[in-house]
Length: 373
Image (cartoon, rainbow, N blue to C red; front, side):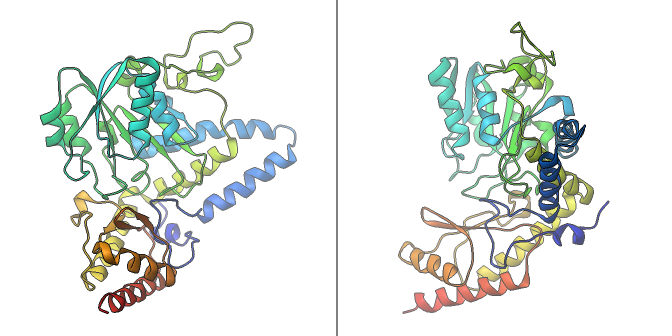
């Protein structure tokens, strides 16, 4: 097992970056992998292209180590949204989900309903955006065949209880958009039937990286609606359009970007070698440190404080008339964050530079002084 220090030493972002929930700057290992694989492709020496083809299995094996799904149950996707589209378009029946979840989920459900008329979205009423097992239990109907949730809500920072949801939905499919927790949260993926995620946020592997993992139950119930020539069990399907595979590979349209797959694999291999539990613990320590700092300035935190219900996201909600002041103070002190509606979101990884903490303290001090005038 590699050390946590070796992992965090590979963070390259400038001080002040607190926006991993939007995009994670590439890690050292990913930058090195990108340069190496690009060199292989640029030279195209005899036999080198076979090495690039092998990156698909390498990345799926890396995803398997972090999710518990087998490599054969995993198919690579260019992003989370593509994987969710595959899953929703393959569903027949009613899917219970929150309209307030990140748009990838509700858009996939509605587009599937509009196009095929076999999926019916049933909108879940939530507790200020937080999806809980109790709410799902109370709003299930006999027509519901699947429940779709985000592992971590991007606006509230709330971490969904996958085990609890599994207990209340029975053998219905549980579909999970995992992008805001994958790579930094030790999640109960074994409770899910469908897991889709990308690698551009907490994994720090860049865009064009993602996967769709499907349980045996999901493979039995989902139809691979748009399945390309690489989605069959025939490696070279010329002259005949054969049936899609019965496995996860059916949910593919074309061959992927081998260099993106290598980037994804390198990041996940390092994560697995360090241990997701250690990475999560370090992230939680950093979140706690920033919560204590923010509390000194009496700014309301509307994201969970309990480590069991949170991930790496801290959401601030200042008085409406002071939102612009807070945003300006953060920007003036070099803090990169996300502003959405009436809130400001800070997202923290396993590494937190002392300079970043100092910069945030300076921003909050300036905000407090301006707010008192």
